Length: 275
Image (cartoon, rainbow, N blue to C red; front, side, top):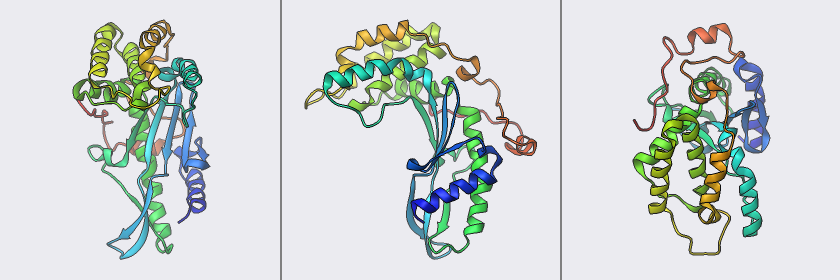
């Protein structure tokens, strides 16, 4: 299965799955995306590889979709600063570092069960394999988007995990520090100063000092106080539902049947990587 065939399959999914009707297809990355005023939701099918289906004893293509949510409010205030840093350092990043949360199929094991979608290279059983994907992809996408599309979810996934695990950041991760601080300012405003001090203390202890020429990422260290001043002056107002979803919400494109049967009982709250 080549890229052209994958795109053809995505177009068919868009027609066959009601939930995907208002998604657009991005051909360059073999993905679906849906835009809102607060950000974007996307499903990426670019993570696929060739393997062997042991049960059918044949070569196959295996897909493990990635589901992601972009949050404009966490990074839009930082973009002008980042552009200035690019000019100072005389370089341009290939991709602007967005603030996003992503979930791979493997992380769904605690919730829905992890799925790998397999299609045989010779095309045998394609319809059977396609129906399996069609019947599953909306359930997984809806579960993630309706539960994780909030600053609260981003905070749990990134800020709490960073505070608890204190991982060492690469140079290119510098903008993520300020995305996390923005999330803390929105979701935990009364604790923002305390959280900020903890994040910056971890950063100071773990930052990987550069040994080569200065890049725009190093400038996040040099001008840290100026960036913090911009963050604290920035208007990070956003709809309350985007900050925290106290209840699962359903997108209008979901049919009544899907609404009733999606979670097969009471909606499950999203799990966090650390408590």
